[in-house]
Image 1 (cartoon, helix red, strand yellow):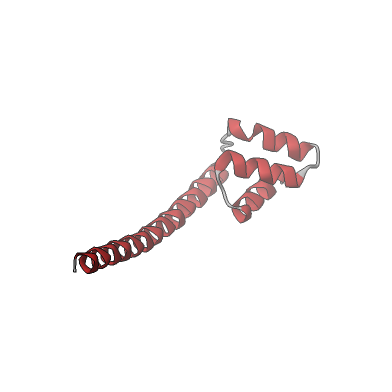
Image 2: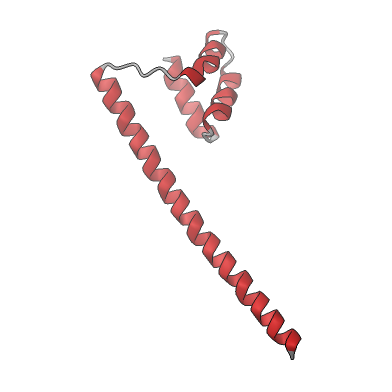
Length: 97
């Protein structure tokens, strides 16, 4: 009888963790989308105002671009910022222009 209660408790606990983590994933995804929108808005504002916001941690990325090493620049951007592959490729394209 004690084992049944223990197994039932374990199942309930595992279910709560699984359901809780999926809710957390949705919140993180929502926050990621909001952050991306905010970054696009700030980029648009700075571009419209003609303000160049230098990012010192991107010096390596710029140096790699200057050498024509686009793939390495994307990799360095990802390591520096934590961006995913698509975001990094888009950002490096913008830097290359």
